[in-house]
Length: 297
Ligand code: NDP
Image 1 (tube, helix red, strand yellow):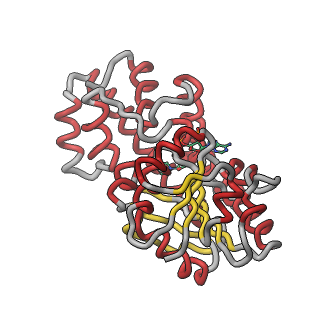
Image 2 (cartoon, rainbow, N blue to C red):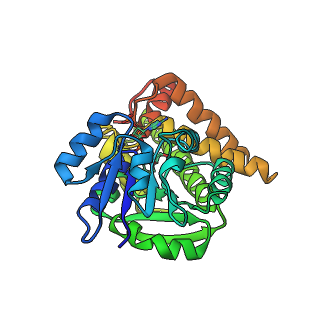
Image 3 (cartoon, rainbow, N blue to C red):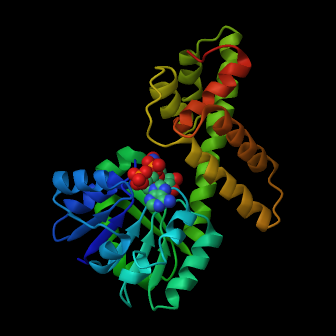
């Protein structure tokens, strides 16, 4: 089992790191920008706490990062406190950020100059999947590197899939989340219209979830979070806006006409601007409700 450093103890990073902390044989060092969160984590889970990214990286054969965007990873590479100051040759940076392929390829090239490997390895399954160790990890990069770091991913993953060259994991993750966004928005529109037409949204979901219009949004998110008005904060709308934007960008780069993806990127930018940085992704539904003049309840 390799020694592991985990940087970025956010909503999903924290439970992923906790799985590693409690996995047999793992030596874990953590770092977080807000140091109090790292200290609390270290106390609760018995992990070593590093003061700088360089110190965390120096202690590890596998360095895992999980930040909002790829640019955050890139900004931590250089400088005396940066990852490159700590990472040794033949170690690997596994970036679990839902990143963008272009920046990931640039990071991989920079690390390769130092003989350090890079894998983009975004995850899906949400914070509950991270807590239970059932995430799906989609990996871009050299298959041999993935084989080497796999034991460091298994404590939080049920499925680890090699998707292609560096950037392939990021591209696939962005498209997956764009589909989530499409389902969330289109289900909200349909249910808002039905509610105004006098059909209870609970009845509508009962039928849709036994029919061909169902999705994770209709089967889980609407019953558990919208109809209950619970809207728990597990995955920020700002991050879904970012993901749909990446998917729309990948499609544009490939010159594939994708009017629905481009529109969805715009709709989630509108919702993010209207609702702010801290709300949950499911709260985008509130924009549709506002347009309808009626709650889906
Ligand atoms: P959060 O916003 O909850 O946490 C972000 C983490 O990154 C915090 O530890 C934060 O530190 C740190 N951070 C932010 N900016 C910087 C920076 N410039 N330099 C150093 N550290 C920084 O995000 P999540 O944990 O929800 O998401 C992380 C990634 O995982 C994202 O790419 C997201 O899209 C993806 N993801 C999230 C899922 C979820 O359910 N939440 C599901 C699947 C993927 P600080 O504590 O100091 O603010």
